[in-house]
Amino acid sequence: MTKKTITADAALKKAANYCSKSEHCVHEVREKLRSWGLDNHEDEEHIIDWLKSENFIDEVRFTRAFIHDKLEYQHWGRTKISYQLQLKQISTVLINEVLNELVNPCKYQETLTGMLREKAREMSRPLSPQDYAKLQRFGAQRGFESTLVRKVLETL
Image (cartoon, rainbow, N blue to C red):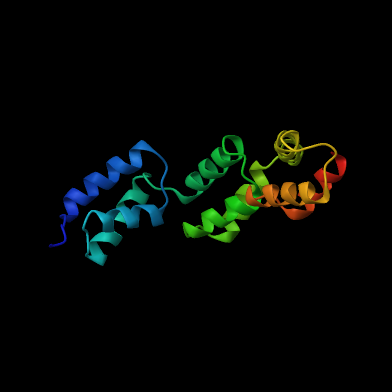
């Protein structure tokens, strides 16, 4: 079976359409171009440069949107958000800068507290050491810092 290929012009149009529907980072667009069959590195770079110059791709805007959505809708912690953005090849400096700007410490802790309370309601009373360990792991899986999870568990 032969691999499908796409012309640079067709790839540019598809990429512009792809980026106009939602925020994407350079890494995602590169993967998409390759999945469409664009195998010329020079064409790929040209398309990425054009998308950046026409403001279809903006790493800062993407990072802000990603962090906002993960905090507000999925209730992810800083650690998980940072890790996922690093997988998308976003710079650590940019990630930390936007996290520090967007994360409200009080709301962040309230989110974790609410999630842990809800999870604790599903457990038997009184909470056993195993239950506390489960809650600790739950907070860590959601991407919250272990020190913050411990602090919140002490107040529950």
